[in-house]
Image (cartoon, rainbow, N blue to C red; front, side, top):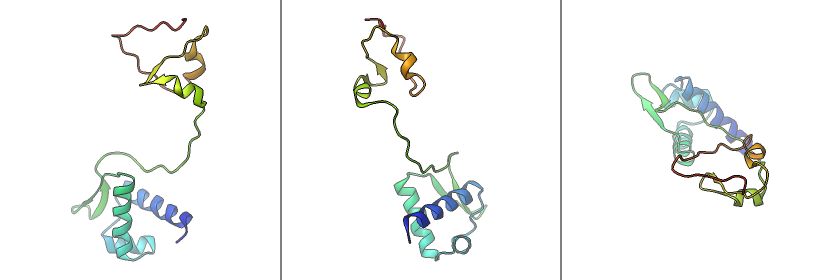
Length: 123
């Protein structure tokens, strides 16, 4: 099975889990056109690799997520250059410029400020 086929299979599994419509493992195997053993392996892989909170609900007879959410497969390129990333420590900006660094960085990062600390952004 190619990587693209595996990705589509996992995306379909995720969709069926979110809809709470997987059915029993043998039914899920038919929906995904795979063997029942592949279903068990796939669910185990998603649980372990993606740390997805998948459980089987006997009442619904379906795999479900125990927490709200979904799987996301994509690469996001960072807009910060290595120099800027080195200046961000523990969620706080330590950039020393004459300009306000938040104007440059706020669109890409969320900063958490602690009221116990004071910051001089103009130094």
